[in-house]
Length: 323
Image 1 (spheres, rainbow, N blue to C red):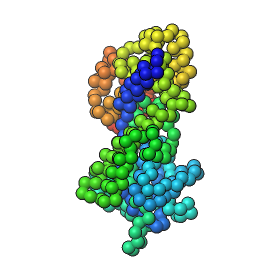
Image 2 (cartoon, rainbow, N blue to C red):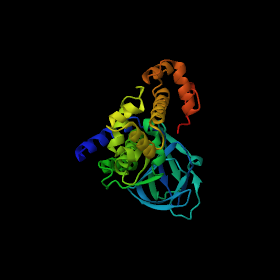
Image 3 (cartoon, rainbow, N blue to C red):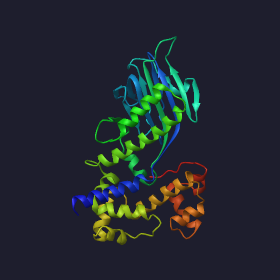
């Protein structure tokens, strides 16, 4: 396979994988802070934090210790929802963001003032988002993603991001009519671009599913699995997609991704099932048919075996415990 064909294959697979990703904003805040200010954001596993500093300076401190200096125009994506603080300086007292008064601005958007007294101008202007981070069929990527991404919009990893952040800066600063909804949608787009940039560029020393994206011997099989999740695949059929022997394919798949091919296929089906049940509100019967199961009972048994709960729990919004 030449370089052009390999690039096209990897691009097709990345496109297929990212199609199932969903970012849904749970809460957005426009924050005017300080001086001084110290804002605490609690640990939220299964969610992601996004912060954009429209004006001023701040220090980001993660709960596990590291400090990072931020300036106007910087953005931060915390993919695993780890606890952290945004501070005017490392020695200031911290207030939990949820303890501060918030004025509703629109659907899931509020305005917060922190550390402002009298007519003192704010030292920092921020837009903050807490998002439900659903990777769908690429849930395995979540474990490999760095917990913290400091976003350099001028770098090659995020082409096109700078104009979006510049628009966010104008919207946060001007607070024109309708700005909360616009900011919320822009935050979702920025977060999706950050994830895409990482998938495309973080493969040089990666392992697991990320490494498989760049391996044409595995990428063909992965693309086939994601395009036809309801097919009753055999290891031999997947190996044929990669033009290799059954044993060589199975060994390489296990060594790279960490689980056997058919286990990956089953987990993929259940991740898709969970997304269809929870987000698209499909019936259990329709999901079972989409995924090639001959009966609801067979699908329900497979779903519970992989996720630890019956499919009806997903329809009620209970998060499955997928690997």
